[in-house]
Length: 356
Picture 1 (tube, helix red, strand yellow):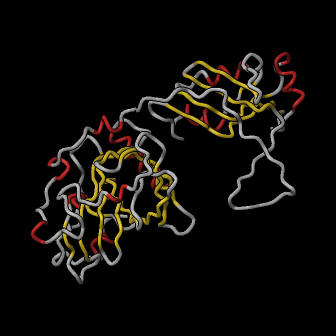
Picture 2 (picture 1 turned 45 degrees about the horizontal axis):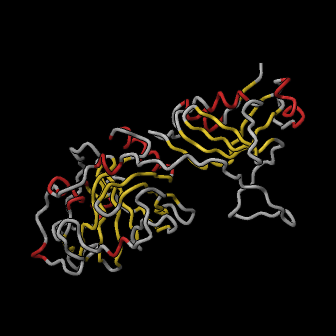
Picture 3 (picture 1 turned 90 degrees about the horizontal axis):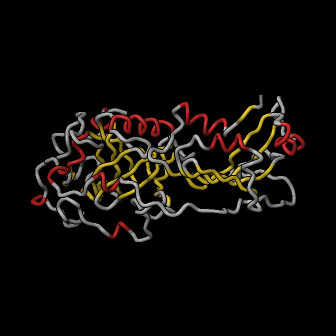
């Protein structure tokens, strides 16, 4: 987007906001800031460092740590990198006139990357696709979030908190003071406005590594019940429903525990011995997962053949496929995205094994 729109909206000789210049942090991690802005309408602005600017999203109702609540986030113009340090009063007559405080700030990254360069690449890809996943390590906002584009308009998304150790139903917006000046937007006055400084280095902060460290995992769930089909009076179509092929196979829950594999029928009977190629394929995944799917044998045209499925333990005929409906649990040191050859094989081929 660049800073052209930012520049065009402001008369920089009459506002204390930073001039439109790109930059980047000298930190090991990307930075983020959330401004609370008492303009014509009170709102919050989430700003994420990417490509030397701050990608910015206006959140009218503010962020939340409750995964059940989705907040509208409107993608607005890029802001200069130095805006991360801005706290002050935009005078009347200027664009966005009103008090602005640094409600939260800290570091952020992609959940799929370990280093800054890789993280920024994946974050930009997610932003372009309209499915931006990121992990915040701030004073108030912590843990995994997603910005998912809506169908309402080209610039609207939903900010969603993922379930993790930082999930909370408490209203985080009640913590209404600046993490820099300890002032609310109403308390901020001209004499309180500090000169711009690198607030991230100046402020006492918790270690980013500790905030993004892998949390102690809960026990691996066992004997999960699959979600079964329900009867309907007649066929229907609805935008809230997704329809899929009815496969003529064996419903199976796969428990993947870093090489230890269990494949269970809906009645918790092991299917591992009968369909060992699926076990072998799952053993290649260095992660913990619980998968809900269906074991199918298909003919050369891709149509399921239940008779061949029943005969497969002896004949090994046809193409054995484990079609995954739902990923009920996944844990990995670096979660696979849809980028590597290994991962594409995992998601797209769904452990297909062709008989010899």
